Image 1 (cartoon, rainbow over the protein chains, first blue to last red):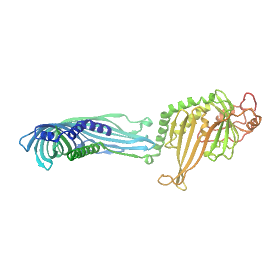
Image 2: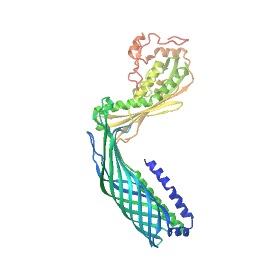
Image 3: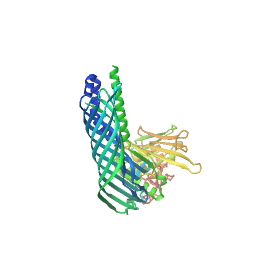
Image 4: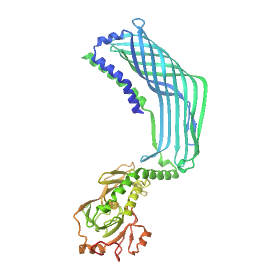
Length: 265
Length: 298
């Protein structure tokens, strides 16, 4: 997983590395001029958003409870277009894509020299989707940098899936529970934050955001095996399917916070 | 220049910040523990069984190859081939090939009571002649595999296979229930790829290391070692040497039932191929030849 994320990071930032190289090598005045004109930009940040995990399971060897306000964390990549409304007041429209995750794994193995998995539980919560946002920014010069407080409003659509993959097998008894919940989410959000913009067009930003999340569809599916003899003994209980779905509208208020950087072209 | 340095510093800090964020994202929570000791006895037994079965399954190809390759030992050796085995105290003994056919091998081990007795192998205590069949060789390889995979006795075993030798190490932790102390026993065998499996007893490093309560080494390790090298051939028809053979104990690598069917009252069983051999070859006088070597008679 780490390798894939680092690979993703390298791919996403190839553009930024190129941009930074250009900044170092190019004449500063040219770049400063771009900052004062309408421009394209992109941002990349790490966002932490609170959401829930609706999955719960009560077995003979373990119990998993549903959790509220669980921190999901991940990257958001955005591209936008900004233009000045006056010399110090700007607005921009941007579209962003995001992938947030909260994953926990607990493994109990037999022994180091024979790491047979006895109890293995993976709780994997993911959320991914798109936002369209409008941002209003005030630009204030502070020394060699600009300080830019901003307000942002947006709407978005996302999919959330929560997986619980649990198995216990001590070669005498066993139980299993592999279930996934898929949800469709609609977002409305408002955010407040600020940029610290250098003259060469790179900026750091942070923001906090309040999200009204509307859950429109809920589907739960998977399988489970009730506690009983281990398959090692050849007399295990059968695997039975788990299915449950619903269409409803349920609202949640959740906060998120972001820290990242951007670059003005 | 200062402007460029400022830009570079800003860019570096920005990248550092974002990389840190991504590493934070990448570090999913993961907790891993080992719980064997807390499991029921039945679970432990089943896990040990499965561990041995998995190990045998995983390593069977390697051992099959070893068995196939080393069976060439019976055609690769010739009567008169002689090997010198030396212990770490400088004491030596000779191993002499007496007779070789496609399915049988007879070899003489010269007794030297001053040789170290590694872990009760009792290989060099007295003069012996061994009958060692191709069947024994293959069974010996199987037994090495079973011992190698015997998780209830050994742990963290390792092996290394090359074109010239198959090397493996058995690691065992023995506990002294009275003193509450532990000793780690390591036995590292080297089995040349074109030699009978029995030859593993001629190239072995044995060590004992006392462990403290944390499982760390406590004091110096005690070790014994045998090394082997081929030396100048022996004239197996030499009269004095035949006398030595006649006085030697005869050992056969077969089970008791097979031994009785050999119609030889002096047949002594070495049972069998385990590491170390579980029964030793005790003295028994020779009353009839176990084998015939062309050119001379016992």
